[in-house]
Length: 173
Image (cartoon, rainbow, N blue to C red; front, side, top):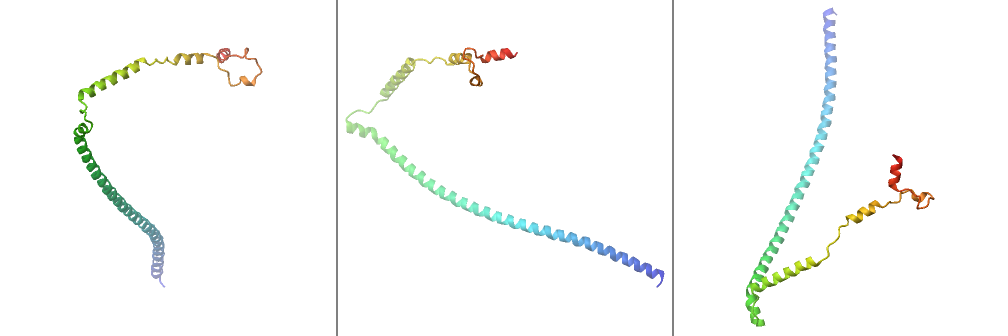
């Protein structure tokens, strides 16, 4: 073998080693890509399941809304019917009450007179109530009286010789 053949064989061996290294790195990258693809497929499946649950929830909400709409429409219709019935009864009430009792219907002047009389009675009742004295002086007197300190029960001093809280503060200064 000649030097050229040996050189070409060495160069071919180097190229094969480089190809093996590149193939190994490519294999590692493809393995990582496959793993990430599996994770991505799992995330897509979870997202699809969540979307299906959301669609079911929306369908349930739509059905509940339709039921509530129907129930409210029925109630509104019944309320309108009762309102019209009540209006008809109220329109016929003054004439029928005058016929039954033999008395005249109440005039607006009578209603105003009664309202004014009630207003004057209420205002007189408010004026005759005794006014309350402000509670602030009582609070000031309670704050001015010496309060026993938390440690008064611990010592055997008679009540006359116990110092007041204000005296303690003055003694420390």
